[in-house]
Every structure is written in C-alpha cells, then in structure tokens.
Image 1: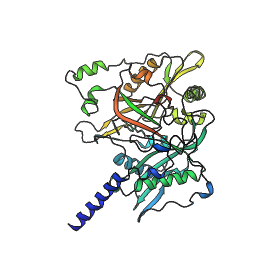
Image 2: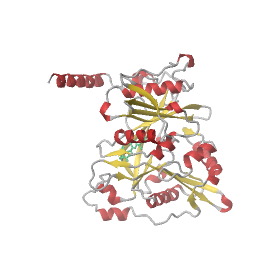
Image 3: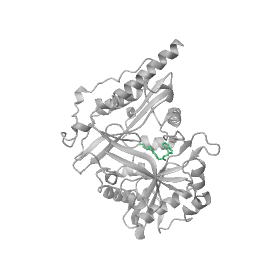
Image 4: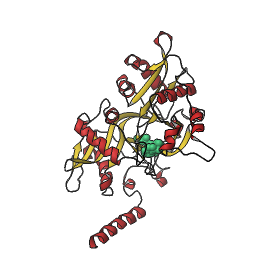
Length: 406
Ligand SMILES: CNCCCN(C)c1ncc(F)c(N2CC(C(=O)NCc3cnc4ccccn34)C2)n1
C-alpha cells in the first residue's frame, strides 16, 4: 500500500510540475519565446563558443549508458528498428504507429558525410531504450546569403516503459553537445506536437488509393450517405500513368535531376542545396523505401520528376490488417508537365506499387494539386522548428517551406 501511495504522489507531483512549468526544458533552450520575438534580429540567437563545449557526455542515471548505433550492423539496426516499431509516434487515438523499416532507416540516417556519433542510443543491460538521430545538412534560410551548416534532428524515441524519467531532454542535450563539438550551432526538425516555437505549421493531406482498406483499418470513415463501393468508384484510378516518357529514375539521370531540383528549390525560403552525390543517395530508387520517376523527352532530356517514400504504419489491434501502406510525397519538380498531371501519375504509380493512401503536406507547390486530385485534409499537423535561429518574420507560410523531413 505504502509503495503504491508513494508512486502515485510521485506521479501526481510530476503532473503538477508539468502543469505549473510547461516546457520547463524548452524555456532553457535558445528558441525565441513569445515576448522577445520583436527584439531579436534575424540570424543566430546565441553565438556558440567551441572552447566552451563540454568534452564529455552528459551524465546518465545509474545503469544507463550512451551507445553509438552502427546502422550497418544488422543486430544494432534490428535494435533501433524494434525500439521505433514499438515506441515511436502514434496518432492521437493510438490506432496507428509508424513502422520505419531497417532499409528506410539506413536511407534516412546514412547520407553522405554522416557522423558515427550522431546516431545516439541509450542502453540498459545491452537493451536499447532511447534513441535520437542527427544528419549533417546545409540549409538555406530566407536567402542565398544564409547558407548554414547544421544538423537535421529526427527519431527522438524513449521506450514506453521508462517515459517521464526525463531521458528525452538528456538525449536532446547530448546530441546538441555532439553537434556543437563539430562547430555547428543550428538544427532543423519537425514534430506533430507543438513546443516552443514553430517556424511553420503545416498540414497533412491524404488521397485514398484503396478506399475499402482505409475504412477497414479506421483511417477513413463512411458518412451516412456514403458506401464502400461509392468510395471505390470515386477514387478509382487508370491502370497506367498518362505522361509520355515517364520511367523510373536511373543513375544516368543524376546530373539532370540535380539541376532541376536545385533550380526549383530556390523558390522557397527554407531549402537544401544538393550535390550529385546527395541526389544519388536521396533519389535513386530503393525497393520499399524511395520511388523516383523522371519524364524523359527527345534526346534524353529530363524535364520533370516525381518522388515518394514508403512509410507503413502498424495498425494496432485490427482483426483484418496489420499495416497501413502509406506513400508520402517527397520532392516533385514539374517544368514541362502540368503539376496536376504529374501528381495524378504519382497516384497511379503509388497505387500500382500497392499503397493504400498517398500523403502530402501543404508545403512547396502542393496546394496546386491537393484539391483537384481529391486529397482530404487530415487531422495531422506537422510543425517545423529551427533551433538557435531568428527568422526575419517569426513564421513562414507552408508554401514557403522547401524541405521534407522523413
Ligand atoms: C520527421 N518526422 C515527421 C514525419 C513523421 N510523420 C510522417 C508524421 N508525423 C506526424 C503526423 F501527424 C503524421 N501524420 C501523417 C498523417 C496520418 O497519416 N495520420 C494517421 C496516421 C497513420 N499512421 C500514423 C502514425 C503516427 C501518427 C499518425 N498516423 C498525420 N505523420
């Protein structure tokens, strides 16, 4: 009885703390908070001093230890896969949880120039219980002058059984320290939740490809006047894409795709500049990970391309289905083909690859095709964050965002 009471009071105390000091951790970070927005001038909020960066890792509680994950090692990759599969992001109703595959994680986290100590794990008795990742990126912020080498943070995950041990803030502090040691002082990340202080709030849109399955897994619901067969007819797609010359991207296309992509991304306020090496990594097709198709005209000229990535969700407790197969719009550049036609072909290609739904954010030029291609606005909001950087205006519109984080 005594123990239960103690546990509850401890738990209640933590709840009271949370309510009294929301974002207690985030108030300690260089993120512009509401009232100081107007004073700061655009650019870094705090100037980092390399000599002052802690050389040793942050302290962990008894029995916990830091562990650099080597994703090329099958066993360690399995550990990260299982931790995320069982403990990563779920929807608000706990019906779905992301199921990032090992091959996807190798794609997302082993780009050119990756650092071994930026895949940060925490272990207890050889078991992985916490993880956070960083990859090196060069982000252009609001104009060509602000070309900032920084880290892209992702996959923050703490095992369900050890939540509220305050491990997440330590994971964030430790990877921040490992980024600072490399003399980098900014970060970019996204999250479905709102913590101080989003630079943009974007929304997810969904285009049904397999209406029956989406209803069976509870992703979509039928209103009174709708039937499954009516829904299937409504979302039916042609067997084959329409655009002549549309084919999977190959190595020989890398130079042209790099030019098309870098030229297109200059339209936005937040974007990466890609080397050919990086285009090879991020866009050459990988089975069950990334699909990229180019439009090749006469003399081998590539005028457009489309791409989408494969991120399935585990369906929790469904009698009939274990997974929701979701394709996520990645980068699409239409210089000759109308964007609506190019994306209509993307839907057809995704359907033919076996996907149940095609997701897209309302960033870049996506709102040009969302309505016409019958995307529905979802409940999912994705917030973009920039760590230690003050923008000219405090927020960017979704259509000013030119980066997709997987
Ligand atoms: C850097 N990382 C950001 C990407 C993580 N991504 C893909 C994500 N972050 C927050 C979301 F809100 C979200 N949504 C896609 C929409 C959706 O499909 N909602 C139903 C659903 C199906 N499966 C899941 C799994 C988790 C959450 C919602 N789920 C909402 N996607």
